[in-house]
Length: 438
Length: 165
Image (tube, rainbow over all chains, first blue to last red; front, top):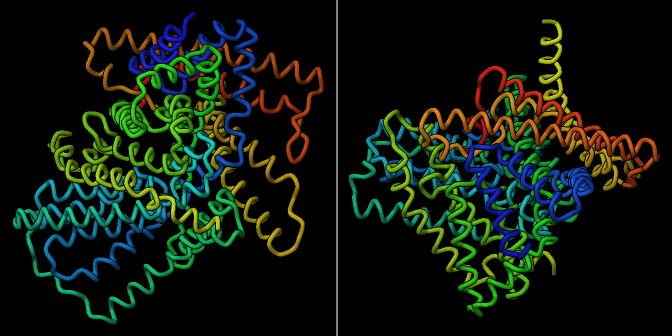
């Protein structure tokens, strides 16, 4: 079988099964069975597939995935995240668009405490949206910032997706986690600038209202009691890595522990919160890891059948500029993201993309950050971006995907701008990991 | 009736064990790091057990996720199909899933039995019999196949509504 037939069978077959409604993990398993049977010697190939599955998730590098999820779920269900919002709310006073700014500020802090974009978007939507509607904010000023800030959790450490990307693409997980910090904060700043511009263009979009700024002692107390202690969580995750006391995997366990301790101190650690957090964690963690179990052999079959090398040779035969190749890869990620979940996209594209990254001499960590941005963006791109649906789910009845997608557009432009900035100034992503290495 | 109750209990019980095992690995890692940074010798078995728990929690929760439509699936295209076509697609998906998972359950058990006979050992930070991982896969795949079969017999279709898309 020539390489393009093999590629068509494997990639086309997989996409067909997925679009036919088959669970992604099972679709990978089914197409892998076909692939190993044809290319790896019949039943022996299937036994090899099973053997690969035993090693797929039994990896210490993947342990932060469930642990970061536990952290985020606990922060959400124990109400600690809401306390941060309430404290920040006291600082803003009556400035125009305060709730939109609060969304970005609080969402960024929550993103540094949790690794889940879905949890972040759902929390921002359910907590801030009702008040924004009541205050007469226009829909795009409500949904845009919530949608945009929700995705920040994917880039700002701790990020479950960064851990997955790092371990699947064999990129240094610790460095990739840290590399997302500066671009993530820069993106948050771009979001704030966008809100400011939107208000300048249409002052009625976010009506001003008489919200008294709390007195300084009250603000100081709120920040001291409700925000500052959250630094313990950040320290547990990022600080322990930086100090060299724990690996990224181990620091994730300390992150979860720090949230438990804080919740206990605030007396919000109920049995119900723990059960709900663990249920939420198990759902997402098992769903993600099952996709890895299912898709482990996929890249091997692509390599074994000659599809990988054929595709790479085909891509390089055009002798395109490295940044054009990068733009094409970015576009592929965006297109796939309109229909598929992030992990499936990674499993499908990494076997082709990573050799191209090496071939064109891109820094792997830098590419990891760009890929995370593309994946974050794909969550918010119509017609099937996941966060669009989460947003519709928490919005008032009658809200359409189109409305949510239009609200997201200026923020999508911010992410694209950041990608351009990263291409022009790679040190935005590489400076911090380089500092730690040295 | 008793058998159905027992079966339901197994599906839920395994999911509970899957969640509890995640708490266990968190605690195991914390103890390990504290011991290491305070000059004591950490447990040699921790990393191997943590790695095994990753597969255990995944396979233990996987059948429960099938029951709750929790495995991510792309429903947008199927949703756009006419009613009869959609139902047919749903049946075909369930049938393919049962065959795929049934086959993998069988092969995992067969390879696992070979491992038992050859007394193969998985060498990590501690030695663990190789059949353990295959047993996890076989039971997980088998129960997932049963859950899809249960859906097929009840006339249900898999929607993936509890998953991400």
